[in-house]
Image (tube, rainbow, N blue to C red; front, side):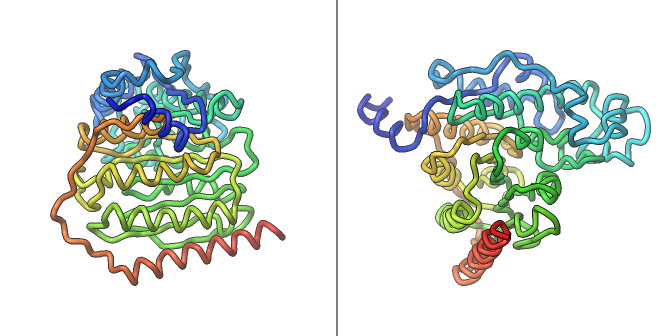
Length: 350
């Protein structure tokens, strides 16, 4: 533990005010039943509890499933019906391979979505400056299709709150394609820092120029990741001036994750989250990928602690993986993303 003065100085530097965590035994136990992340949420919240962070946060425990009437705001009636039944049309709606049929999947997913919405509502009501749901962050789910271990796109519902402009940031190893597609028809900005995707993309309609993808190569380091993030996000804040930020903190870019593509430690992630906290905008933090559960628990506990203020000793060691990210190529990639954000600023003035 650190001296009180050190804790207070960290709190003044990073935290903007009260921090809320969506947490209940039912939420944690149900989300832990999903095959790919079985038991993960229990480990994550046990570590948060062990560091006594639950005593320092406001716990949002009165969590209810998002009703079907609200779920229809994004997912189709046919998809939700199939998710409830899971007895036919499985391939048509993506219930195979990485999204196998799971007993109770509809109940689990609707509760996770309800928790994300509860956190977003607490944020938009001005009660808190940071709100967290580590069981959320299901960024791949489409309107009519489950994808990438994601059955319902809780993020989309979290984005639908009171702010005129919301910026969505994705730190997951994989592309937040479900969220990006949902934002093409709205005034929203999505920014993804990921392993493989089309670089800067644009769409037609209100969401044109509003998707920025920064595809990084294998072995990217903490310093490269954080520097790229800072350059793009600073430009995004200037161009878009969001009223709130939603950040998906998927932990599968960690060096210890089973994908073993990026070479990040906790430092790379925390440097990015610090920048968002320092922006003094309402911030919704969500989970996502992360398949080495001890490392995922360390990361999300460390981010929770950072949002509150104290600096706890948690870390993940980088690997000896070769870094394929050339500094010149990386600079050009970031410059391309920043140029796209300038076009966004011009488009918003039309």
